[in-house]
Image (cartoon, rainbow, N blue to C red):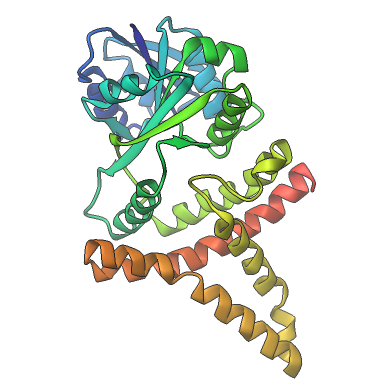
Length: 317
């Protein structure tokens, strides 16, 4: 069974060479690697062109469009998607393909490892993601496109990724939900991993989360039944941005005695919501530094809340 590996590429000159080498080193006998340059301006495509791969170039249109261009130009029975900041482990296909042999499984995906543990923010973000992944069951209702194997015939039936998602947020949720609506199952395996270069800049991380909030508006308009969350992001992830918006909008109430009491109560609740997961991670890992995740998620909720506002203006209620 031939596997086509699809990598969307945009301004990733620092990692693209290592990503391609990792993909070509996967322990599987029949693979092809398709890299789709999504209008990079930093020389990423030139680096990619040095390797024995199929390189496609397009004007910038977002990762959904790039992934579609990649799988449509490939010929494997299975399409494996990863990102230009992810290094697939050599056994990732062996593990995922076992799941695809199970009855009615349309796609299979896995988890992250961390490629840059020397950076504090990267460690904090990775610890939270790993904690979420460890709680996910085998049969799930969401898989991330950073580590995703899908049967080609199923991609053809659902039409691939929805290119209306013009940014790196929500397009993999959308694909997962449409696969489920086709009556197919999604399988998750924690052991199938790609090593990921997590964000190391707090400003850039918060910008990503703002974008996340914005595109969630479209996602939940398209899939109203998922507004309470999925196996990765639960109801609490939806509540925190709304509370953050209340805190921002309610700042004038601090000038009034009654309003001040209510405002401080909401602030205390919002702050308290940031504590359980870091404590859970500390108990699991024995690393007190994970308490610093709390201020990160505090700011993340605000960024996502502001993104929700931008999404409402762009996509409507």
